[in-house]
Every structure is written in structure tokens, then in C-alpha cells.
Amino acid sequence: MYLCTLLIYEYLGKMRKIKFATYVCFLLFSVVFISCDLGEKKIDPSLLPGKWKQGTFYEVYKPDGTGYTWDEADDVTENEAQKMRWTLDENELVQIHLMEISGTEVPKSYTVTELSSTDFKYKDKYSSRSFTRVK
Image 1 (cartoon, rainbow, N blue to C red):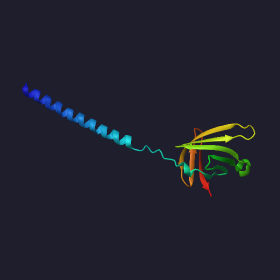
Image 2 (image 1 turned 135 degrees about the horizontal axis):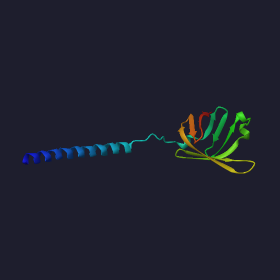
Image 3 (image 1 turned 60 degrees about the vertical axis):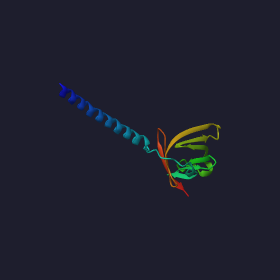
Image 4 (image 1 turned 60 degrees about the horizontal axis):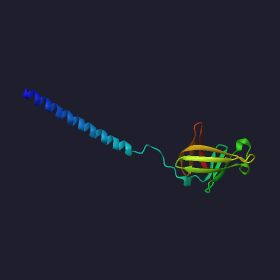
């Protein structure tokens, strides 16, 4: 009987060690995964001002938060471009298009997925755009 009791205690002692080791491993993995960067890129808003082009579509962002956009395919020139205001907070780009005739403002919100000195990409629920900087 005493031998059985010893074997049971020894078995339970090993199980506690295994359980403890499992908890330690779980804790270490948790710390590692929480501290990892999940791949969200940091966007530098100082790179946005400038002239950007995708095919015949252009967007110009000025450092003061204003800009304009036009599409040559619609027979619109830069002088006839639609004015806008813009903000870029983290990776959220908001363009507020200013309608000349009605005076209304139309906000559009996008998620910037890439912004470098040469490339600019953003998307919304419906579409995405990929621009290159025009010098």
C-alpha cells in the first residue's frame, strides 16, 4: 500500500512539473507574440506632398493640407482640377472634395497601404489606387 501511495505521489509530482512547464511555455509564447509587430507599416505623412499619377489620373497634395485632382481621360486639365483638402493620420487618408458649383464638400476616406518617396497606394472598401510620383 505504501508503495502504491509513493508511486501515485511521484506520478502527481511529475504531472505538476509538466503542467508548470506547459504554463511557462505558454507564457513565453504569449510574450513573444504580443511583442511582435503585426506588419502594419508606419506611414510618414511628410512624404505625401507632391504630384502623383496613375495612368491619366492625377492627385496633387500640398504641404498646407490642400490639393487638387483631375483625370485627363475625362478631358480635364490641371487648370480645371477639382480642389480638395486632405489629412493623413497614421494610415487614414481623408480627402474632402470641394464642389465648385454647389459649394458642397464630399469627404472620402482611404487606408494608405504604401507611401514612399516614389510610390503611393491607398484603398477603400470598393477599390484601390497605385500612384507614382511625378517630378
